[in-house]
Length: 67
Image 1 (cartoon, rainbow, N blue to C red):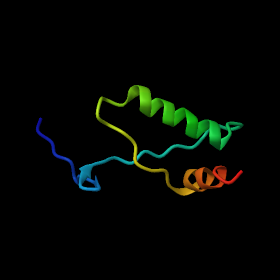
Image 2 (cartoon, rainbow, N blue to C red; image 1 turned 90 degrees about the vertical axis):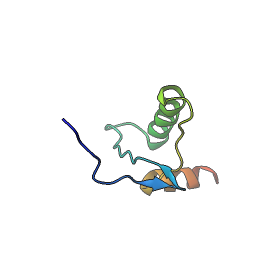
Image 3 (cartoon, rainbow, N blue to C red; image 1 turned 180 degrees about the horizontal axis):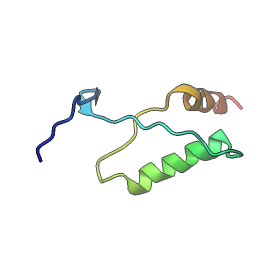
């Protein structure tokens, strides 16, 4: 079987993916963000990183800097 991606997204001219998640009930946004940041540090292959947060996570991260 031979397949190809329908699209190849880029971020700053590098291959990229988008990951969306919803915290489980009773899990704070800060705890969910910390979980995914730790997961990125420990489970992404060498040389991979995450670039940014969007939507509610982005707003939470910005607000957390001022508290």
